[in-house]
Length: 95
Image (cartoon, rainbow, N blue to C red):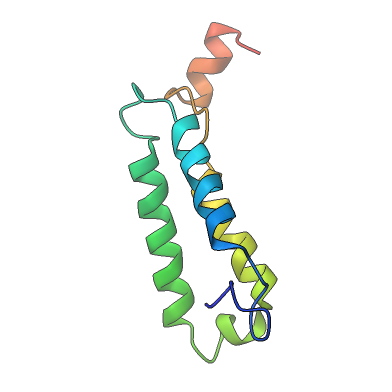
């Protein structure tokens, strides 16, 4: 994707990105059996594959900022997930 390039990308500072990603990883609940940083990496990889398979389709229709936003969303989508489903949350009357 070359997000770091200022000419063809977004000019993302890679050191800042790595620092951010390490902070994101630390925010995942370690005792959650499924919604972990490994799950986030799996979702990220799956999304990357879907974008790559869509060459000539979705990937051509998206701006670099859109792809970057999608990939970052995949990384952070389950931060703080308690590991329970909606029905449990309703029955437990959690916030």
